[in-house]
Image (cartoon, rainbow, N blue to C red; front, side, top):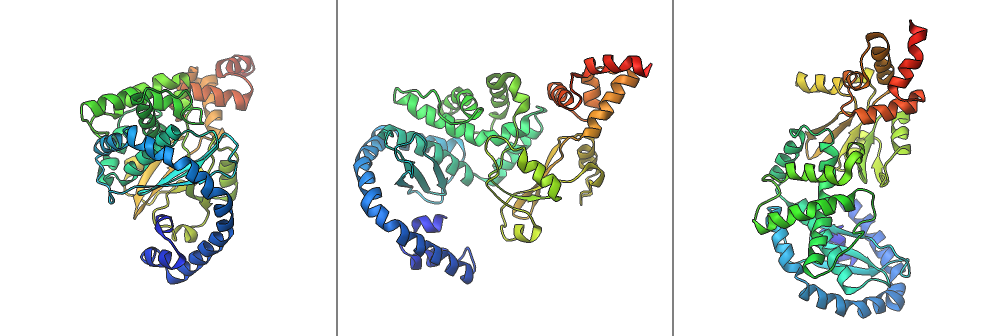
Length: 390
């Protein structure tokens, strides 16, 4: 994608992408590139380019006046990033729904692609660019520092540490855009169309403001206050946040995979492969390997990890595997709820203790899943059944 964005012709694309794909793949991609260029060129000349020319001068003025470069430098230091390129490019194109109210943007290395809509103001392009720029800087941050950061989350002991880690990238990017707005005397009530990310972004804002002022980095003591602030922002919902993926290798038996795809969060998996052969074509693509409890087997000599994974239902284990990572997600199952029911009924355990015994780390989540499965809360269900058991 970066090679395509920087290219001015199919031939230029083949030259830039020569180290990234086989000659046959390059020819196919270049042909696609040429096809869409010919399809889009008439629209660009008649519609797209006049719109961009109308909006671009105002965007350029606001970029210079709003302090974007200053904040970008600060964020680079905060993330300990040494970008490969000093020049960054904004690719603006009118949205297919130019008169609508939604636009998307994305960053890839030093290129930012952003859709424009009629209601967009020059200032809007600035904070969108800062948001995407933060993603780009984090992507380029030293991998060993990000690995150490992940370990901080794992070692925190917070039951939702892993999904909080997953949201950190978006929370930081949202906080950065809010900080830019703040420095320009503006606010934004809904900085991101999502149920959790705006709240987490606002929670991170004071932490980011302080870290930049004191010249601290993301990797030196940011995790603990972020978890505290995140939990305060989400309240009781903090134990219900879930992982989200957009591109992934989704491996497992068909019924498990279909169940996963049918019960996804708000932002679903958009692109996925389902075989190891297809996965092998994408060296850095993360994978979700889903197995049943009775079939759990991991090719590892780490007996402690294996025991932990079998013990904790819902446990997520991330393991380096070459240039990508394996993500093992162990979902809860009906036998776990039935086992908890038996422990409460026969051994007199309370709901929280029974939940822990079968692998739940959140009593509230156990209560919700139990109620959905058995039709009523745990202790009420047990009181109903106990006379029959006696």
